[in-house]
Image 1 (cartoon, rainbow, N blue to C red):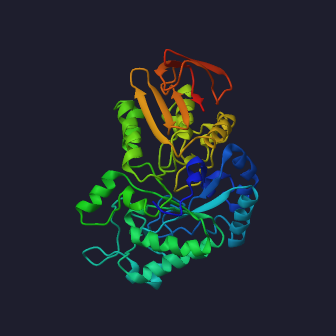
Image 2 (spheres, rainbow, N blue to C red):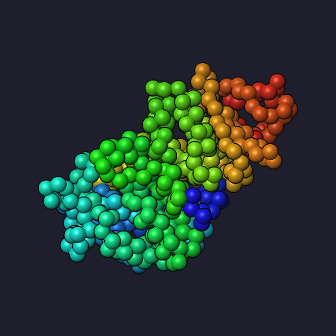
Image 3 (tube, rainbow, N blue to C red):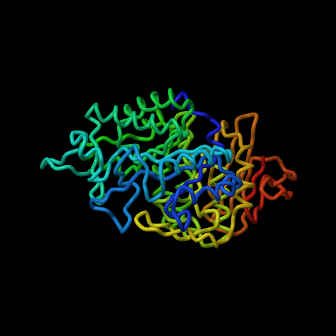
Length: 423
């Protein structure tokens, strides 16, 4: 893993925000009044989804996808001016948070600035036309990192934005050469020491499909050489299966525990229940008690926790990437719970060994951190009903850090009606 990675990131929370959908206005300036609330949730890092202009050619929907970038060095006029953006970044910093922005370096829109300036920077299909390697991404064309000049242009762009922001979320990071990301990180470090690098590592099926075509795609182990945090997509299909009833919980948690032994010591996998590409957690878990238990586990497990804007009010609709769909903020407010979980996360011994197991019959998970000096235990009734589990604790009474109430371990077992976290 990158030698510059800050281990405190494992105890941090990222809040993902789509400027277009966050407010009715959909602008940089309109986000600013909400920053104190976002910080009070327990947010360390604010991730702004792509801030750049969106292509017109082959546009999806009426407003286009922010991941069809038209220009790497300017901001989307729909959101405001560069001055408005910099004002927002300053406000994020003033509210005690860091700011990272989305960079989309695998592809651009077909009418991007670079198409006209440097057509040689693009991937060409066998017939000689520009194109992309993922067929349904019809609104983008892929870049070709075999061209050295592209590396220089992209790194210069990153260094420009690093003057203002604290790091980057890198879209489809797996299909851009790790060697490029390594060089980029070294350059950015000179501009913004300690910059944060979150990589969207992709599904294993995506990597396999690329390699079967003779195309480049890096595994998580390769990406951890550069990135501080990687996506959980390597086991996301297991999460979907376990939560959708098509496979046992134990299969998903066995894979989650295996990461402790298969990744570098300082690995950091993003812990999330949803994001802008995935189904909302409140839709996936309509049982309120189940939603609360899964939310508590997402904070307890090893890795930076991600909240997608609207998750804190139990939003069930994922805003379209291609239209203006402001978030409905009238759902059940989970903010008090999230703040408690944030405070607990800061106390977790995340350098210790992490392990989680499931009781499939009860729909219950037991997780712990252990290293000989530290012990933290969590019991999570994921099915939304009380359950009893064996725990690695001596018999006696303990405080549930989440509620302040006393819980009892008797004959090595603990009964939990809701999430229980013992530090």
